[in-house]
Length: 280
Figure 1: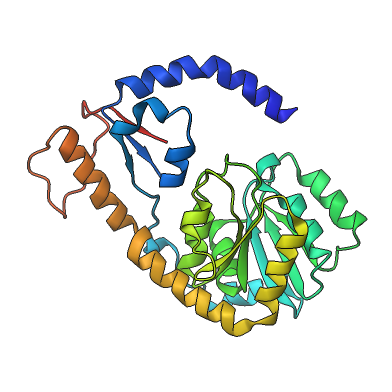
Figure 2: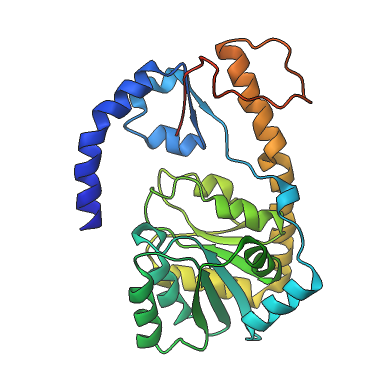
């Protein structure tokens, strides 16, 4: 039902989208895989640039002792800690994660977020007898969310559709040296953000058995988790720091319409600039 409503809405929106894309001086996509698979962008690929999303590492601080103790109390279970973060909506695939947990008895799962699938998700958790190991926590403030990231063993992003175009939460996990188990969604940037068997494990979208297998690997080989987590942090520092992304964006702006007098110490407000830019 949601998919059909979105399809109808997109048909109405598409002419406006194409008009904007046609007028844009440059179009930014967050991954090459998304660009290559996008039908909407196919007429405009000659003016597309790939610039990933980034995060300010200073915002992702290690939790203090009180927050860490709070997080330890939330986890409770002594099994491997799997964290999932995001809106509880159709494309996130949290039902797949819950079903996978039923086939991986050596993990505990915390799901953080609100959304229209919350009641359905809680019902599935109860139906599968997983209330002791899988918990939907609802919304949490940023500091508590970061405390859970700092104390988990791995992040899981079980998305099932390309609507999950990038997976920004993956960068947050990388900042805390956490590996990820994520769906290799065709046409999404997830499979580029997560390097399979280097910074995490990629699984088939919508397949709880494949997801359970990967989660068991994470649980059974702590040395692998540690090695992947270290590699994830190094990849974050190399590719996804906000200053690196900002430099690429500024270089693009300069190419479109040179702005004089800008240096690395200048904070630029570009909202009034005449450049036409579309981020997708």
